[in-house]
Picture 1 (cartoon, rainbow, N blue to C red):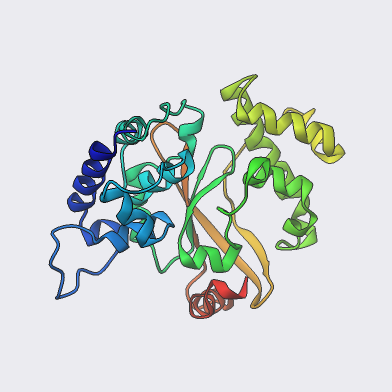
Picture 2: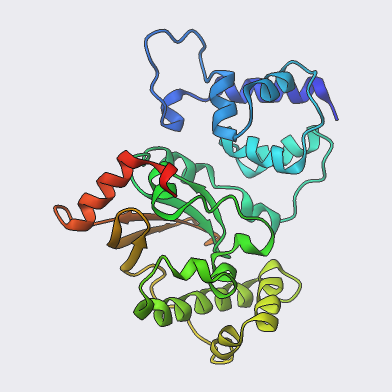
Length: 277
């Protein structure tokens, strides 16, 4: 681990980022040219003290998980992320692991949607980043670990997940998720993370097995959906999608018809916040 080079790299990338780049107000008393240390720490989901010690060459040896969080917080490109890992003494992540890294362009768009339920997911249904309204609507989907990171996996293994959708919509949702996991498996092949998820579900879920054997093909990724929220009740939302160039990540933006009951409930959720979930 090259502490001096790591500290210098973090500092230069922090100073190059402007508050507007990450959806933060500049304010009138800002003295630094770029972001403050505490802002980078918040964006990366770590304490200000932890991040500050890294820049001061006296911090602990960061784990791969912490480096990935820093790469997202600093809006690094994949090449910059690889360099960050090397400076910290870690092997450069393989391409399959890079599916965890949010495209910087996606992050810039997400930063400008902070008042809207929006999130970035990869082709395995793993949520990589969410706005606060998305957390209020869906819960913190980035907290999951292991195979449960995949929404496809959770749907067939955790009965609580289905409680967020009306029972009459479960068949449609199941078919959609299996179709998209099938597409990911076809793309990545045996030995991939997609294959690990599929193998586990084939062993655990008869429903998944039955649908998998039908060789489903995905249609529209995110049609209109109905949600059952524990605090505000039923919502009918539309989902607009933006796919990055290599098709590995999708930005999902949930909206309601203006003036509708669902629109009012989304506004209420933005006030209530994520503490209700």
